[in-house]
Length: 358
Image (cartoon, rainbow, N blue to C red; front, side):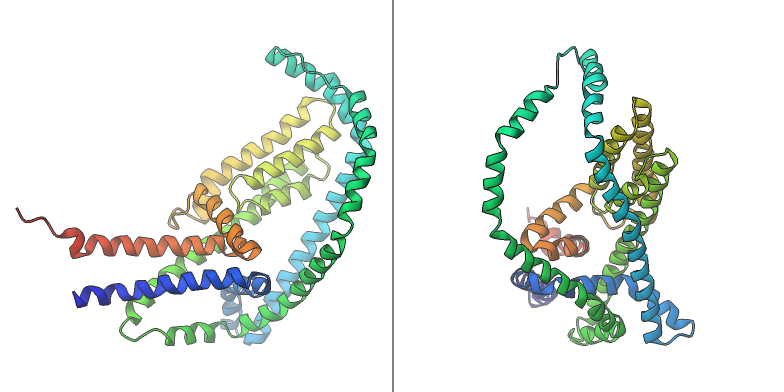
């Protein structure tokens, strides 16, 4: 009996530690955002720093090279995406009458013939409604004006966190190996072999998932962006990049990209041929991502289904805000590995295997 209690004591300590960590993250979520972001980025980038260090560069020079490469990649992405999205917004405003005319003259008649309905779009009533509610809109804006101060303070906090992020990332990358070693020394020596084995499995699963998911995001950004650019869609490159970078949330990236691309196609093309080309890009991209790219780069070993991923993002986001969104998938992966070991321990226990005496 004493032996059984000793075997389960590490798991009890791990459970209490995780619960305490979640509570602490909830209480300090606004403060910890840059720290958690820096830790996640340091975990992802540390292998690249180690690789450069093994090839003759110092630790500091290696991490500076990796950080500058990441900074310029993000800067180039922003310089590509933001101007295209801004121009798409201007195009939407300028071409809105053409969109309304397309809906009235082509989309609704086709939909009515297909479904046997009599749908119509009364643009004059829309204009009258907007005109009659102008006063209400002004009152609403007046009520929202006091919130601008809060929004400004929130913006300053975000800028402060953003400026702190590179500094934290530098220190975490510089001391990453020492930090991991120090954490390892805190484990009681009699538990060290089992904890080390589980930690190595967690590192393998997390590394496979995070770095594999990053590869999927970049590859899907290329596929969607390149595909939409090839079919001639204006701002298609920016829309495709946004859709690709959001594929870590199952189906959300593809749905949002499809929505934006459809809107852009309606603004640009006069018929359904352009829409069919745009939709074909997303059908091909989603098929490749679901059946080839994600299984090959991420694999099924992590054991996180799309439903689990969506639930983890929503649950941890609700519990811990933006910090929860950052930690949702790593925590879910850790939970899967720990649950797997607990279930195996349960199956091997005397409580499970003991038969009832007849």
